[in-house]
Every structure is written in C-alpha cells, then in structure tokens.
Amino acid sequence: MRSVKSRLLQEKIAKLLMQLSGIIITGSLFFIVGTILYKGLPYLSWDMISKVPQGGFYIGKEGGILNAILGSLYLASASTLLATLIGIPIALYLNIYVKKGSSLARSAKLLFDVLFGIPSIVYGAIAFSIMVFLGIRASLLGGIITITLLTIPIVVRTLDELISTIPQDLRHVTASLGATRWETARVMIKYIKPGLFTAILLAFGRAIGDVAGVLLTTGFSDNLPKYIDEPTATLPLAIFFQLSSPIPEVQGRAYASALVLTSIILIIVLCSHILASKQKKHKI
Amino acid sequence: MINRLVKDKIAQRLSQGLLGITSLVIVLIVVGLVWKALPLLSEFSIGSILTESVWAPLKGKFGFLSFILGTIWVTLLSLIIAVPLCILASVYLVEYASDRLRNMVLPLVNVLAAIPPVLYGVWGVLFVVPLLGTYIAPIFGISSTGYSVFAGGIVLAVMIFPIMVSIMVEVLNTIPYELRAVSLSLGATRWETIKHVILKKAKPGIFAAVVLAISRAFGETVAVLMVCGNIPQIPKSIFDAGYPIPALIANNFGEMMSIPLYDSALMFAALLLFVIIFGFNLISRLILNKLEAKY
Image 1 (spheres, rainbow over the protein chains, first blue to last red):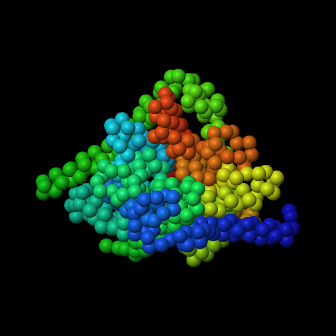
Image 2 (image 1 turned 30 degrees about the vertical axis):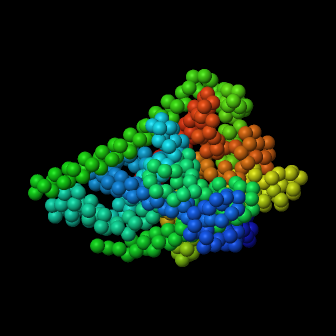
Image 3 (image 1 turned 90 degrees about the vertical axis):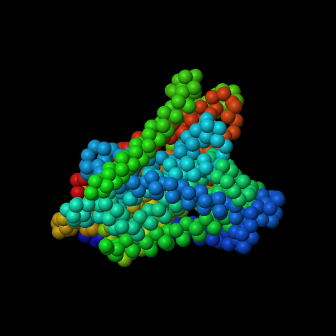
C-alpha cells in the first residue's frame, strides 16, 4: 500500500488535470468567438449588412452581404418550417400511435438517431445528383429540399426526447376522459410548447449554419432571390468564398460576415435557452 | 362522436404516411448512391480502389488511398486531443463540480455545439493555421504553411468536444450512487474511486461516445477542408497537408462532370462515408440504448 501522502498527491494532480481540461473545453468557446470578434469587428460596417454586392465587391469594392443574410434567412426559415411540419407528426406518431417498445418504434427511433449523424455533404451530394437528373438548376428550392432532409432528424429526435419527459399520468388522464389519441396529442403539444420552440430554434440554427449541404445545391448570386428557382447566396458560403480570396480587404469581409453569422447563432442560442428554462417551469 | 374517431384515424394515417415517406427517402439515398457508384465498381475492383494512391481522373485513375489516409489522420489526431480532455472534464463535472458550476458549464458546451462548421473553419484559418505554421512547426525544424492534417485535427477536436462531453456526462450520471459510497467508505480516495470503479463501469458508454464522435469527425466537411491543405498525397507527418474524403466531394462535385467515371467516383466517396458513418452510428447507438435500458 502506498503512503497516504502520495495517494493524496495523486488525487490533487488528477483534480488539477480535470479542472484544466474543463477550462480548455469551455474556454475554447470564448476563444473562438473572441477571435472572430477581434478580427471581424474592424471590418464590420452598416454597408456590410444593408447593401447587396456592387460591381467588383469581391475585389474589394463597395457593397455588402445583405443578399447572403437574407438568402440564409429564407432558406433556413423555409426548411425549418417544412421540417417541423413533417417532424412533429412523425414524433407524435412514434410516441402515441405506435406501442412503446415495439420493434417499429425502436427501429424508427434508431433510424432517426443514425440519420442525425449523416453528414450534410452526403445529403448535398445526393440532392445535387437528383437535381442534375431532373434538370433542376442550383437554386433556393434545391437548398430548401436538402436542408429540410437534414433538419427532419433533428426535429424528430429532440421532440422525441421532449415527449418522453411528459408524465405518463397526463396520457392516462386524457385517455380516461375519453379523448382519442389525436386529442391526447394536442394536449401533449400544449404541454411541450416552449420546448417545441427550442427544438425549432435548434433546427433553424443548424439550417442557417450548414455549408456542405448548400455548397452544391443553392449556387451563388449577387442579387436578392426573387423567386424560389433562382440561385441564392447564403451566409456560410459567402464567408467561405470571401475567405479564399487573396485580397486582404475581401478576407476582412469574410471575418465581418463570420461575425454576423456568430451573432445570429448566439441570439438563437440565447432565445432557446430562455425558452428551455421556461419549459422547466411550464405546467398546464 | 364518429367525427372525432375519423379525425383520429386521419391523423394516424397522415403521420404514418409521413414516416413512410421519410424512411423511403433513406432507402432512395442508399439506392441512388449505389446506383451512381456502380460504374466505377464495375470498372475497377473495390480492393484496388481502396488501396491505390494515384488520383488522376483525367487519366482514368481513381485511387482513394490518400483520401482515406487523410481522413484517418485527421480523425485520429482529433480523437487523441479530444478524448482525454473530454473524459477528464466530464468526470470533473459529475464527480467534483458544484451544481452551480455544472449548470453554468453544460449550457456553454451546448453553445459550442451550435456554432456552425464554417465558423470553426474561420477560427482555424485565423488562429490554428498561423500558430502551427509560424510557431510550432519550426520547433520541430519543419517548414510548413500550417495548412495540415494537424490543423484539421485541432479544429475537429474542438468541434467534437460538445457531443463527447454531453454523452459522457449522461453516461456518468447513470452510475449508481451506492458504488461510489462503497468505494469511498472502504478508504479509497475520490480519484481512486473514479479510476477503479467509475471509469470501469462507464467504459461501454465512454466507448460509445467516442465512436459517435468518430462518425461526426469522419463526415465533417467544411471546417476541415478550410484548414488541412487539400493536396491528394499520403501525409507523412502531422504537419503535411492532407485531403479527407468529404473535402474531395465538396471540392469537385459539380465540376468536370463530363470526365468519364469522375462523378461515379465521387458518389462512391459519398457511399463510403455513408456506410462508415452509418455503421459507427449504429454501433454506438445500440450500446447507448442498452445502457439506458439497464439503469
């Protein structure tokens, strides 16, 4: 048996290492946001967020990235809406109509879990091939379809977790009052409402930040999208393209665009955090 | 009354249909990938595609070895960095930290998960690449631009922090309190309890978390693409540029579709990713589900 002293020393060292790892992991968040803030802030101007690219924007002349900001918002809103409309019924179906623990319920849940992990580049590649096959050109529509496919698993999975937090009693009570399963579902939705918005925000955040999926499917354009079948700029792609430019001014704009995207994401996270704490207190 | 039952039935059929369509999409994805990859597979044997390293689509040579090795290098490096850090941090959060600290740190980790890949890429270009190129590589007497598999590994490690920490914390939370109490009452220090009792008990869960992180790392495209150089070569040191499979698809899709077998080769790459990730995901999910059912 080693001496008590050396055992206690070991304990101290281990604890120190653990604290250090914790600091590194949490610190990396502030570090990333800090780096983007530090580099992007000097280049951020009102022009950047209120104007579309003018001639020669990508060689450092006038203009902004309004087209990309709006393009991203259109894309993310439309696909989140679609994914929610498809995802909510699926999640409810799996929890209410299908018997709990049945092989259908289990395999469907596993399927969505696994789908959740499939990288967006694979979705993008498939969607692109289908678009080529059907003769659809790169457009807002193509992007919306791809991102919708990507976000459905997120919606289903988070909702599934939310629904599992609903007390069983609620189901029994509604059932004993003679409600049909559909009516039970409506009560459940009311119960998880704040959490539902969190899930939607989460999907929206994922949708607005995704690059690999839109890289092949939305194309890129300097104009604001007027119709759904037009190519559209998105914020992550604008960052990506500007960053690969050799001109320092354009690179700086990439940093500023990254800052805009970071702000959008942080606002979303903040909102979902507030809603999540509401869910904890929320009772019917 | 009948009206309500009809409504119920309609809702059931409708959601059933949506589930069916969604599952069908998955089947379509797989069928599409295989169908598009078939021309390449009928021309070359799968063995030679996976083991040859010459990538020259114009000359009809499609060797995936350098891409596969690029992916493996980046993934391994990120795991070497992330796994120990995440295990230590999650053990600390569960075993030592106060509730207040835990409630502060875990949401922050979730914010990290919400940051889009492209922002990780920007951070990589702004910070990791110059750091490696100007400061760290010279220490080893290597000249490097910094765009390397090492940079990819670091960026990826930070990206997989959140998924690993959140799963590991969940796994550690499932370990019954009595186990700790018994070990501590026998005179073990807390660290000894963690080392000999808790980590041993949590092993399958931690393994599952790592496997899940691997599958995330494998498919990560844009952040890695931005920092790892993208030269189709077999990386010889961690400061060499590499070219992971997802980057290959992203960089080349849509261009040069007229070159024979090129798009087939890229779809094969996507299929490869899909199969590997699907497999990894499935394994870790099965382990995690089993653990969940147990406790």
